[in-house]
Amino acid sequence: MSAMDIDSTDISTVLATIRSELDSTNNSDELVSLFYQLEDYYERKLWHQLTQQLDEFYTQYDQDQIPLELKHKIYTQFIQQFAMKLNLIKVVDFLILSKFNNETSLDKLIDLKTEYIAYLKREHNFKDNEDGSQDPEFVELLSNDESLIYIDLQICRYYLFLNQFEKCDSIMSKIESKFEDLTNNDLSAKVNAAYYQTKCLEYKLHENYNAYYTNGLLFLSSVPSLTTEDKVKLCYDLCIAALLGDKVYNFGELILHDILQEIASDESPYNWLYNLIHALNAGDLSSFNQWLSVAFKKSPQLQSHQVFIKQKIIIMALLELISTKSTTNKRISFKEISEFTGTPLNDVEHLIIKCFSLKLIQGYINQIDEILVITWLQPRILNLKQVHNLYTHLVDWDHKVEQLGNLVHQSGGTVWAGI
Image (cartoon, rainbow, N blue to C red; front, side, top):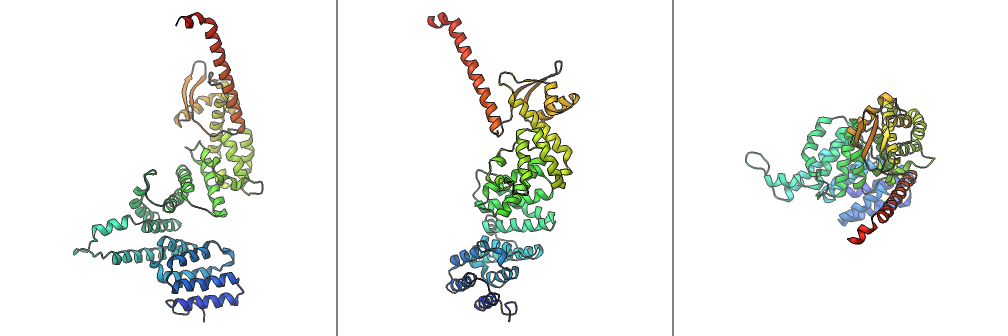
């Protein structure tokens, strides 16, 4: 008799049947002993230890060696029977890690939410009002419960998987206000990470690259840990968003984050993307165009946006040209801009105005002499070559200050002495 045929409420029988099935398929003794431990913790009602053991089963064992059917059985015939005894956020994680199909996962999440609300009502002795409405205190309790917020976020994710955007928006509109203040947010890092993960999925589906890039970085700052596979996927998506976001011209947070190293090695299938991001940040037209030709073969998504991407590297090249100029002489002729960026002379003014509108630079244009005068350049992360250029500027500036000091000393010595 298989575990699917027995009474699922008989926990000991469920685990015993699973153990016998594992023995018959020559699974590791370590995995079999884990199920003995699960039964022991359950019978002794050690819910915290039981949760830790389940977490080990779902996250630390080689998941390729655990059949999907086994995960389904553990959740539906074991965890689901006493879910209210455990940390509900962990129960949601176990449900997701059981990898049911999207429709089944969504149904189980909704059922879990309904069960948890009923559980809270019983535990806190709340009763509905005579008109059938809920007690305002109970409503307040539900709106601030971290576990419910976490369930709602996961429900929204599965609505997005199933392209049910209106249902997702309906839930998100009720909880988004709790995440608006980044500096005064009492929710745990895990719940915050779930929110940004859900927003990332929404923006990815809607191809909102600017918002995806921002929320992706916020997700990285909140999530406790990621698998190598998840890191590579997120890194890829962030790089694509950085390339295609029409308001993303500062790549410092991505370049400085360890996640970019996941695709840095020559063996990585996305090494071209790593080099493309660095060439873009450096405003290196030659290197960027070299890697872009590789990118177009690897990514149809980038190929479909090739006009915008080429405009973006031209803007970054102009920023690089400006940064190479001395701080005392930020005057650049249209001709020099045209030669450095490969932009036709007639289009240089439009390029400059575009940079002004994006607030990447400040200054003014001398249209008579066709000269751009720069008063401010947006700060950005520099590579070693750019740092060396900056060092050269500082040395030159220091030398000029010293010359000025000597001139003042020689020309006005008697004046300073009189004072």
